[in-house]
Length: 509
Image (cartoon, rainbow, N blue to C red):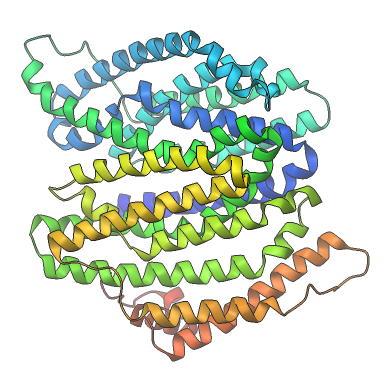
């Protein structure tokens, strides 16, 4: 357990440091250095990479994740690695061929509104292939309980290299073409470092793949599972990144450059969700394995409440600071204010449903998760195509949030039908009332001029002032009303200082 704790702590530090670097530079510094069109170009290339890489990846990383325990002490693991590398290469070649075959309609899709992307259309191919292999090796590192270094490469190194690349472009030491090709170089360098790490430190090996058809029967179940995971990851990626792919075709790369800033800020509400999810999964899996539905229901309700508590707190801080946040950006980025609120509402509602995805994923009914994800993807595509021409950036934000809410309702209804399990409780009511009251109150508190003729510093000081005041006004009634026993216990430990000295016992999640 020591290695898990160490790696978990290191990875958490790396992830939060990466988020902080990303938010500061990508959201608040870059808009002052390069044009919104170039910001949009970076975003489009990355979104295409994230979505299209799912196809050559073939879900093979998820197969490795699922069957590693059975294979780790046998030669099957290295044989599967060999098979995975060959299949990914084959799928990458097939992807490249299809991408080239459909080049005309794809180029025409972006030509009118996002002509800047067209000269770099083919760079998507190496980005997709690099990212597909990167995903597999990152999962291998996870299985070896060595996630800190891959996380550092992904969250810190790549961002630092991108910051350097943008600075060189801003100083005109790189041409536009060199800048865009440099983006590919950043991901390639990060992949090569990861490859050396898993080969040298994690002893990654691959052998000649399984003899065929002798091992066909043994591979049937893993490959079927991989096909299901491929479908699931494709659908999830489409939901998460489709708005950033469709938007520039309708509104241009400049609109995407603006849209991605509030999108990232709105999604930050869910950063704690990922950490709690990773911690909770083993407990949920144990309860499911033992068919302990009472414990599972209690865990789900407790986790849901605490997730909603965190979500409403962060949502309140974000919304009351919306005007001040956009004062930190160029004036034209103010068009994204409504996007921020819409995305934040969608993510908050998502957190209110708790860990229904994790429960469904690790139950025997995981196939329904695939069905619901397909429904979410189809809704995302339909709503983006329908709403973007009508409402522009706000339409894209609504498409993301509406499909996410429907997705959660489907999962919640199914879990209630199957397990009589419900995430919501009456404790949600005071959280909603506190949130609404504070947002209404701060609506009447004007933007304060702390310093004359210092708009940037005034904006920053307003964020600090309003954020601090909102946090105090949120936490006091929350503690007094005893909405969450876990929160009250945690706050008492912080106030007493015991949490910093250790030796205390926290209740089970």
